[in-house]
Length: 422
Image 1 (cartoon, rainbow, N blue to C red):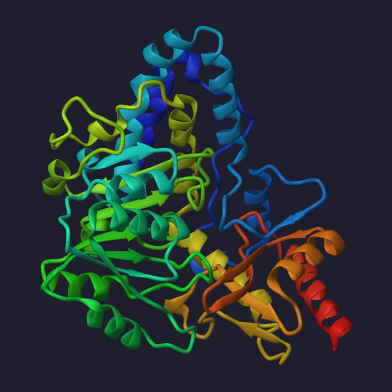
Image 2: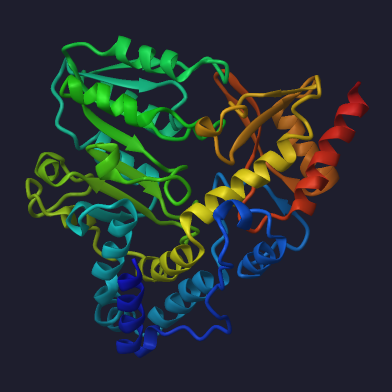
């Protein structure tokens, strides 16, 4: 991807109004392994300095939306201000000229062709293009999971009502359930009528990593198309669409890529594009051109072009460095609470291959919403409450800008709260 960075920097040189003056040097990555780098607090403090920080709160809800680095924020707001001077001039004569380069950069991150990638606003929009656009007939079946993203669930249910397809739902039973048991549940739901498998790579409610590669292989044996929701894995875990073998892939770019809010990516395997109807009308709806999904008239081009700085920062930092740091942070706080009887984890924290950074934890005697409110009001700690099937707790999600000191404050707050109720 170094060649892409060179192309991006050249694009900025050739389009002076889009150059962003910001006093920061490229990250200097120490020449050590990702495992060693994970505990280098001086380096990660430098990373933290590249991000804006809240004045009062400790933000441990990066699973919802990540902050963008200063340079991405400055580009986004600067481009909006620029566009607002002469909108049609700066949007169409400057910003639009960078769309294809951004597409190329995103395609490189998932190992796809740029002709298979489209840029949208959020994961829900990307999902709905596929859920409502994939051609299905009455009686066709879709297999999905009750712990999938809520908007995916509501969209499949709406398609059921409209087109009389059938969705078969499996349910996860918690962290004790093995990958083999999960695979057996999905495969057991397949029939000769199954046309689509809807898979979530990382369950947003508890951070559980599903065995998606094996599940995709099982689906392919039966000629079942696979839609992979990678909102919580892209930018953190390996998401090579060719290696995974999925037909369709969606993700948010304002989560682990730290892109501008909002932004998203949709991938469709090239030979499947012509069979998917765009959610918004296209002049050529049966085309195999991925750009038919972008016929939305005026778009938020400041966000799309600011993605270039997010991609550049992400490539400088390195995906594996990021993943190992976040695993290190998870282990730091989880290890202090996992042996205490008052806490229960809804995340498979014992298996590295089954979770990364998102953790769902419950405290005996506390409802999730009440505990969420208590931590915010008493300790200025922002998490999020989860009240979903089989996964009721608070979701804790640090990021590369989270420090050990901040996590220690959360551990202390939870321990103190536990003692108050015991």
